[in-house]
Length: 281
Image 1: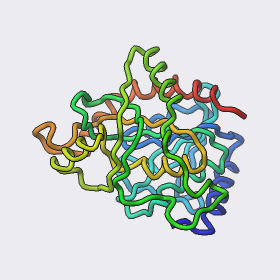
Image 2: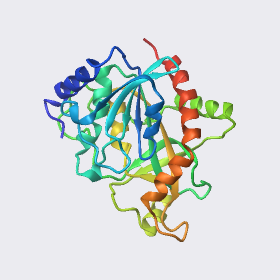
Image 3: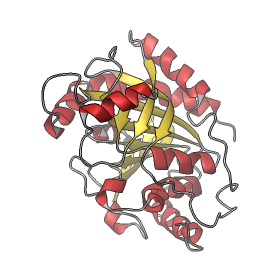
């Protein structure tokens, strides 16, 4: 539940981060399971562990480095979360969304979210990169529950365009330059940490989901509450339960993200300058 201190806490964390560097980021990156290595590509980078940032939640998930990295991508100043926190770690929706609040207080105008997801759509292949066009919140929680702080945004934010159509077009064009085609899909956010059952996957497909994961949704809601535009990219690290006759494993997640690392890095390097060009001062 939002408290009267959330705004001041976000402000305090943002000031702490900015005090370590002259970089003033315009774009934020939230790098999910196995995808955090992109932060190592930033030039003139400064790394700040989450444990040193006031009021900041600590990442306990496997494969999440747990540090903030500020630097440049083709002269564009960015801030990257090398690992995120999840509801399944025991955090509240407000705590999961807190880093996004901090991004907003740092002056970030756009956020690119990445995640590892299970593929529900039969047309997807393992290792595919998919643009999220919409989401279905089945986590049973929302970071905006409680008193609204108008300094963040209005009481009832519109979620019609939660994932920017313009940014998705930029990403598709960028992929074509790299000789790739990006598809789009609807992401279903579940609580976790157990993987879904085959029956649950059949249900998710029936209600229109193409992807399933355990993150992203609270963060996107908080970003849109603050008027920050969003691009989200899922890496299909495995086909969801019941599609292939084999058990699901976190090892498979990291093996797949490592395999597509080059493609993923190249896409972000192309997309970020284009999105920066769309931002108005």
